[in-house]
Length: 584
Image (cartoon, rainbow, N blue to C red; front, side):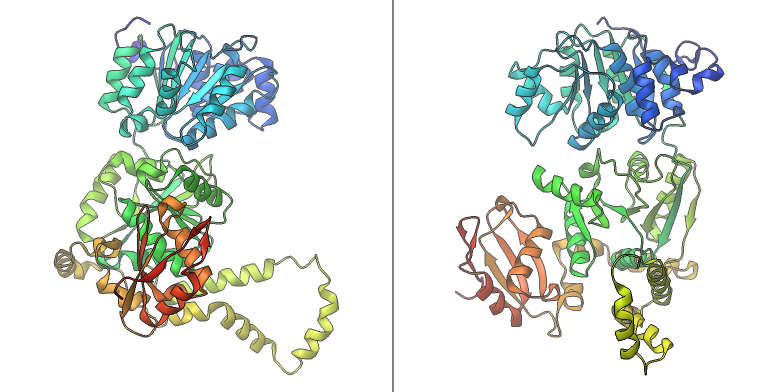
């Protein structure tokens, strides 16, 4: 394709170029063929989203380059997927359209959606190709014949270099979440792919933001592209309530716990800056009984798939992730996005918060900040053009009250229509004949809330008040790095309080010849050694995993029991060696 001049003049490149008539508010009115309209009807899609309404009529021409700027969750997949299905020829069994996206998760998500749209189009085949799985199987599927290939950049280039895919006959190239691909360092790969699709009729680029790198790629490889903008770039979703809590830096973790406890039905993602923070906080919360796991760059693809599967199934209530690891995640019904720390980049904040409040639902994006971050918060607030609401960190009594009300609601809503409960009523009545109704209720409450009541009995106020700002800024400065100490590089200040089981911080250090090469990550390894030794989480301190081995800190009084339980056992054919690293 010849290079063209990239212009953003409204008269030439803004949409709509003509008034959209009333019948354009349906998928049929957009110009889609009957089989695709039938598929959208079967899915319950009656009215196109703004990006679909504006993009589909343009893309159906098959000859127009397009830049679509819209946030994640606005219906971009249908905006390009439906036109692709209409334009490619199902009778030709070779790749005619190529969709390139940043991550395996997004790749699979796109294919899943397009599969639904092609329900009434026999002979149409869509294939996902991505790293972390057998390239041989993907080559076999390509040879069977597909019309649309959805790929991550790295795996696609592998296939090109193996001559397993021929891009000479590609007519349409879609770059989805282009800004994410550039952020992840795929610019050279994208340019390589575009250089190897010289006969394409159209290039469609979709992005949430428009950084300079995107404009350069557009100018170099696209011919006078039309630009569609749905909502203002960087503007936050209006269905999201943006909240923030102000606390001291060294109270950040405790504030996170309290927020989680105050929202019993929470289903969300906690974002951290580093993978060390993600793993460490996940371990702490796991030890304290929360259904949580971490997603970061040290996980293998198999481990990542396992974590994401559990999160989608809601086996996990919370996922803690770095920004890089979370790219491409699209999970429905997320109620909360929590910024454990504010990101430095406003665009990153927009991407984080966009994980909730999707498809017309509402969501909460909340940030834990300290006094010195208020200026940064106000800057983000101005750029995303959405008011942030200051919230009070709940008191211990507030948390207990919220949990109590939640439990009462669950109790009242419990389904007793199944099971022969009636046969047990006489025995229950006899057993509790001398116990008043009030006492029964108290005992039920005690069973459920004993842990909460004890933990929060003398809970301190974690809020930073206006009158304390100056003093707290100085205190935060003195304790700079407090979060880093909590994140694994020096937990001595808090470890005795959090981990010891009545014996202070008196730890033994154990060596075990199992590591990440054996398929473990920290949360799964923690569960493994606790199950093997029948010990409680509270006896453990820091766990330092390497590829071939792991170092475990454990209360000295429990060390011998763990060694007896694990040393000499077999794991996947390997004999486990565990010993006290200090007993030489």
